[in-house]
Length: 96
Image (cartoon, rainbow, N blue to C red):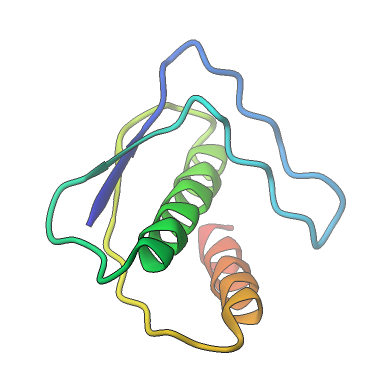
């Protein structure tokens, strides 16, 4: 699990054109709170997921900068990019 937090003074940007994800703020602070990734590559991937998911949640809740805890369990795949966009699309649908 990773906790994502962001300073309350950070301006979150709304998503761009349809099909584009909002860019996570560089001010996001990610803190592993349980467990660890099996490799540096997977840690980077977990961080990417956590930052993007937190950004989507913050924007869906009016930009309120509450901490978001993300539990992530991934497996290595040749289709990482496709999987990432599939998860984000499903999350955006759920948050509407």
